[in-house]
Image (cartoon, rainbow, N blue to C red; front, side):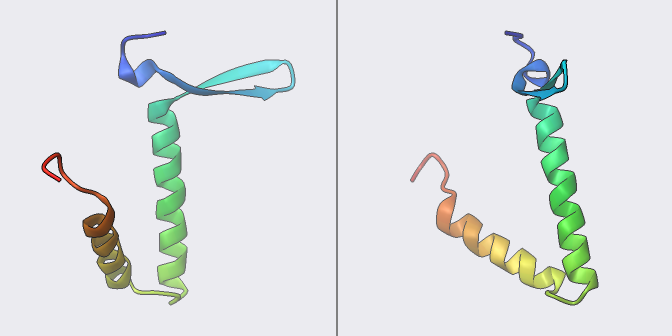
Length: 70
């Protein structure tokens, strides 16, 4: 296993006889791209406003994510 966090393998994908190794960085970037595309579509279609998403994200962050102090 590599000590370089950018090279750590998150998963292996088998396509036919070929195995592709996917790093944590690649997986994170792929997830981010998908989420950004989904949010863009929902905002463009008027399903919700960007400000609503920001408000909900802040509420969830305050509710679930705590610093080391508590």
